[in-house]
Amino acid sequence: MTAIVLQARLDSSRLPRKALLDLGGQPVIVRVMDALKRAPADKHILACPEDCLGAFAPLAERSGFIVMGGPKDDVLARYCQAVNTFAIDRVIRATGDNPFVFIDAAWTLEQASTALGADYAGYAGLPYGAGVEAVSAEALLRAGQEANLPEEREHVCPYLYRHPELFLLHRPLAPLKWRSPHYRVTLDTAEDYARAKALYAALDSVGEARYNGESIITSYSAYVVF
Image (cartoon, rainbow, N blue to C red):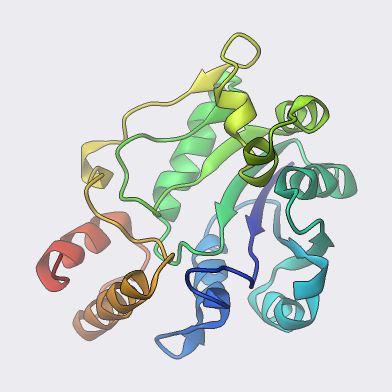
């Protein structure tokens, strides 16, 4: 079984409560879930800290996501908890600050990594904030047992790609139609948020599919000033 597991929180120091900020009339986290819901995964799960359940649960239910509470700072443990709770075989890891995730690229990556039997997969060269990581449940559980550094627990996958002797890694360059590494579409600062609102408004005004990778790259260069 393949599951999209989305991590999100509310206590960002640079852009507080960014998951609940408005983006085109909906909270950012809803925009992320609506994009990810387009992927034909077996389950869609929002894994958040326990103290965020009250804020996220109604939004997750409305978007067709299962919400699950777990440790605040040990995000790797949160993912392992999801794997064990729902008997997941493969995880597509996404984050709540990426409302313009390229879901077509995400699903293509997952299919390729599954065919290769890769423990970890991630495209190089996508816009910052457009990508996901595809990980086997077995590799995540091993990392959960062995990873000790704080950044390996908080960011979930560093233990995997720091140990190529232990895990089969698939890190290809993204196809040209999705490749724009100098663009930034994540939400981490007030400047990012202003840019995201401008991009969303531009896409909405021209009637393009908001989450199609090619149209986002085209509109980003056409409408957003860097």
